Length: 523
Image 1 (cartoon, rainbow, N blue to C red):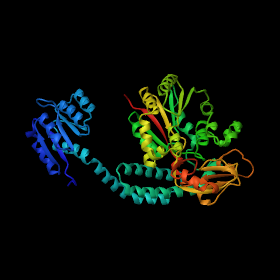
Image 2: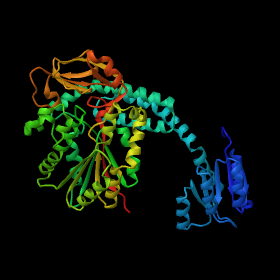
Image 3: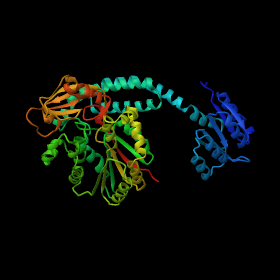
Image 4: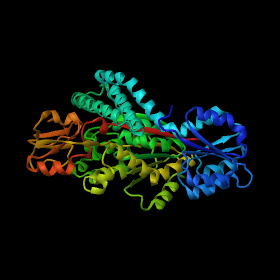
């Protein structure tokens, strides 16, 4: 039955009573050795490799916990199942604290033992097999859904399912089927881009158009319903793709009940536009009409996002008719995490308030990756990027603050402003010197793409809900996985930015985002 016979050592002073269990495991293809005491078991394990040890907790001489302690010192990688007659919580806690793989309480049936053994020794292979079978059964439906996608709901649902498959098949190490998912994603990205060229201007021009929730809808539709007597935590993790969110969600679900929904970023999918739209509830033209001086530096991201706290306060007052206390912080590094935690704890004591925190680690990572050989290596592709994001988050100030909020019973709105895309194709553009420098979107006079299929182009600021520009301004936004290069710097840009994670353009990875309401679990 098994490709390789796995070896099990069962240590129990009543081993004669367990013969039916031993025979049951042997009949399932396992090689099982049985021994009566801990000293002999330790001697045997020093000379024989075992895939799993079933260890009785109560034995004459050395107890199971004493054997476990010695074994952990001598072989920290040994996989151990503790078997005991005791249901005492203290015994369970001690065994788990010493990193046993599982815990069985006597009398356990042969079937119960087999279930634990199979999960530990064959689980990964069975998950891989099941993932492959499930994807093969689902593939015709995925292909059909891609062919039939015609509205924002269908595109968002299909993209979300492909992200799930990419994460699941990666964890199952199904590299062959991952290529199929990648091929579907390429086709989806192409269809999505062409569809957005028509639909986005319609959403901007027609208030009655059937459009998805956009950046401007996040606060009224998701944050305001949480407002009440208790404070609310509003967390934005800058530049977080949907697949990165799906890696963080299990960590968050340990503390909160998670209600995930999807929304679309406005264009361009970059911080000055998308995050300002979240905080203000307004499109760029509306912000510029109220604050014309803010728009004079449209190529300087940091300057354009210098007023987020003010925008949020005005937005909340406009929506609720009252002044909402807002504590706002933008966090670029986890240095000073203790001071940040102290400030957040203090802010959480203010009733009816909103604590808005913007964490920039992921955005800094994606930007810095193009400049650092080390970052390029550790975040070499989508899979590596989301793993790195998860590892950071698990030890971050963001996670610690969420834990504090959960302990205090504070509800949280957790989201992002835009995602990023792994760019591989340079797209040549012709522009004057006044064009903006961004690689996924450009504004300027006499601006055009050499291949029109690589970009959404418009001469009307209304198509983007932008303020009026100079006469003759063209707006160019990259499609698919393209990044803009100039003919004079073609080789330099190709070498520097190919296989970079960029944002600002039109793709599901940049536009279709998670917004999650987090409700603390009862303690």
